[in-house]
Length: 146
Image 1 (tube, rainbow, N blue to C red):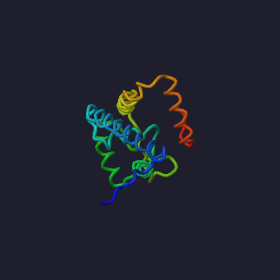
Image 2 (cartoon, one colour; image 1 turned 45 degrees about the vertical axis):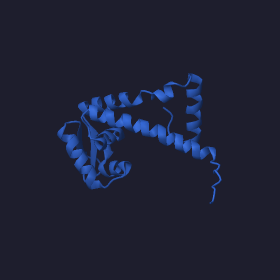
Image 3 (cartoon, rainbow, N blue to C red; image 1 turned 45 degrees about the horizontal axis):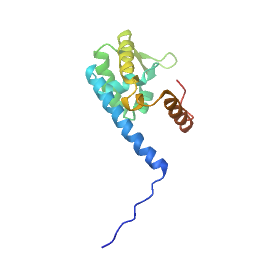
């Protein structure tokens, strides 16, 4: 009979596992918020990407999907009157996806629901939350500070 020695995990491996758990909980929140707003998760993800008008191909790249998938997503969002397609001023072949007033309201509602801290984070003191924020900023130096 062979006995296995426990492997010693690096702190980074444990951090990765903890973040995966935390992100799983945030994903559940995202799915609930999307459903409450009568959005398919892909539509909700699309709205989150539209902080400013984007070309269809850039949107596909950000969503990690094929251009044809984005066309279907935008068709459905357009039917709800939350986005429009407009030609790019310097190249009319390029279509920009632009939020309508209703789209801005829906995106804001989605963001408001997702910005509430998870209970897991709300349980940390304010000093601990700042410390975690600062460590994550150091780990992600290319991300803009909010």
